[in-house]
Image (cartoon, rainbow, N blue to C red; front, side, top):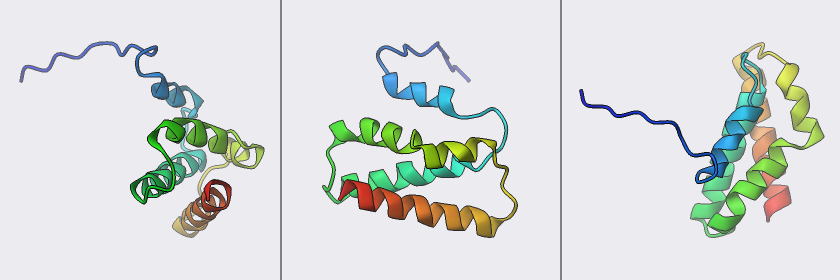
Amino acid sequence: NYLNLKNINILKFSFLKILRIIPNKNTLFETVVVSANDELVSLFLKKKIDYSQFQQKLLSIINLKEFQAYKKKKPINIKEISRLNNYVRLKIRELCI
């Protein structure tokens, strides 16, 4: 194939800074990030938040102290992941609507 991979300009794509926040090991924090992103996309598609608010809201939510604790916690089972997913989505709806 003819792939031409290049380094990404962080100044141009500042949202990629979020990758530096994610731990290198498997933790429940990934569930927080993915769930928050999915819920914010849903709110954007329903026109409840603007695109310009998206990055700021995602960063502010994942930087909440209650979610930072999940950087050190490994997932135990799917039930725990599902419960956290639902909680993150509920918290975002509370904060954004």
